[in-house]
Length: 146
Image (tube, rainbow, N blue to C red):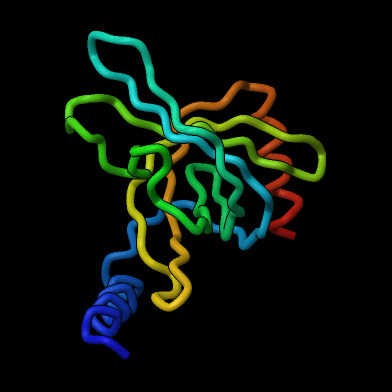
C-alpha cells in the first residue's frame, strides 16, 4: 500500500469520527445516473461537457455521492474551474424507480475510491431541482429509509 493511499485512508477514517459535517441522513442506494459538467463564464455562453454514465453510492435530501470512473470530461474537471472565476456545476439525470429526475448540483469534494482501479467518489450538494422532481426524490428517500 503506497504512503499516499495510506495517508488518504487515515484522513478519511479520522474525518468520519471528528469532522463529519453531514446534517442529513444518508441512504445507501446504487442508482444509475448520467452527468455533465457545465461551466458558466461571467461574460459568455455556458459550456458543457458530454454526458457520462455513473451511479450513486448514497443519497440525502441535500446531496448525493456519485461513483464514477473519471473526474475530467472534455477538458472540464468535476470540481475545479479552469479559470477559477467561472461558475461551475453538474447537471445530473438520476433514474429513480418511479421516473427519472433532473438535479443541478455542485461538487464539494472528490476522492479516489480504489487506487488500483481509478474509480472516484464525488460528493455533490444539490443546488436546484424542479418542485415535481423534488417531490419524487423525497418520496423515494422516505421509501428507501424504511
